[in-house]
Amino acid sequence: MIKAENVEKYYGKFKALDGITFEAERGEILGLLGPNGAGKTTTMRILTTYLPPSGGKLSVDGKDVVKDAIEVRKRIGYMPENPPLYVDMRVEKFLKFVGELRGLSGKKLKERLGYVREVCQIEEVWHNFISQLSKGYRQRVGLASALISDPPVIILDEPTIGLDPKQIRYTRELIKNLGGTHTVLLSTHILPEAEMTCDRVAIIDRGKIIAIGTPSELAEKIRKVNAVRVELSGPPNEVYKALLDLDGVSQVIPQERNGVYLVQFEPQWKTREQITKLAAEQNWHILELSPREASLEEVFLEIVAEEEHKKTDDETQIQKNIQRDDTVGE
Ligand SMILES: Nc1ncnc2c1ncn2[C@@H]1O[C@H](COP(=O)(O)OP(=O)(O)O)[C@@H](O)[C@H]1O
Ligand SMILES: [Mg+2]
Image 1 (cartoon, rainbow, N blue to C red):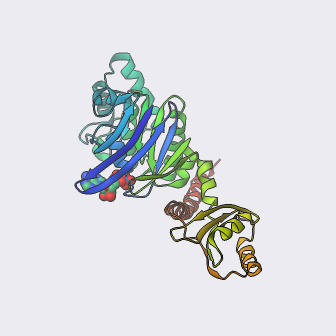
Image 2 (image 1 turned 180 degrees about the vertical axis):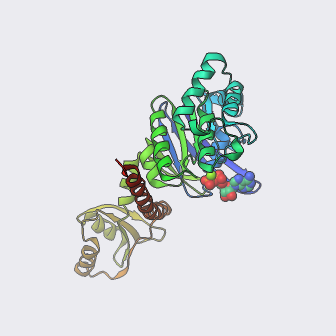
Image 3 (image 1 turned 90 degrees about the vertical axis):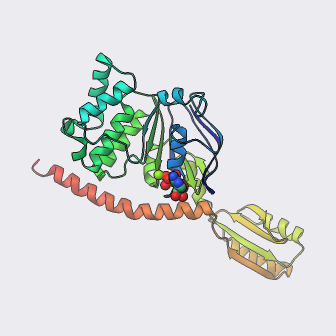
């Protein structure tokens, strides 16, 4: 349904996107997970035809975003990072206006207005001016305007930013419910959010997708950090074979300098001790034996995961407090 192939984007001389490739199937929820500045918004703006790519190909439902921009727009509901709302309009009027722009009228329009009013939980502010709304409500009106015409593809740029924990939970649930019947592309810098809401996650960093897979596949990747860099004084070929023969070693990868290897192993094996023993037996000197520096994606994943542990702890605490408040008087 969504296809991006080798997409590049320059802002002047700065390369913001460096060959992004991904696909989202019909009915799939795909997450773009990455830190600030990674290129998530840029990717979404190109996909929604608001920004031309500098290179590569993108299509939605087979329609090219450059050549067939109008057809692409018809198929997409887009909630940008800061939804462009007409602040001097009332919520109802604004959503009606957006619905009409998207070709709705009469009974259908009325029905969709009723739907978004309910699922986006904006009944309370339905008659208010947008200028008076809190950030959380503005976000929900932005979501409502993306959903109003019931487009098959929904693109949501950081949909839970600015919401309180209760609204966050609700919005994630809402997004999950859109899956199956809609193709959803959402961006987030929150790892648990991606895990909770998405069928698949593409991790994006500095304009590149560094990993893509289901949340459990990505979790598997993180566990594969166990590796050591090794250089032994023996003949490189013999060293290579001997390392590969050790119990628990899954891969031996030659490094930039001849005779240096990266040895990947399953975590339960005492591989460093085995290497020390091997060197002693063979009368080889250990020139290097060090834990490998984690690759960019591993570092990034760990950083994101750590940060989110802290945050979700806070969030859980807040949620507990809310639940406690809810149960008071029952
Ligand atoms: N209009 C622009 N002009 C110049 N640089 C930009 C512009 N928009 C974004 N960038 C840069 O491109 C990179 C990617 O930005 P963005 O797509 O907004 O990332 P994300 O949404 O992942 O935070 C960042 O380094 C950002 O500073
Ligand atoms: Mg962004």
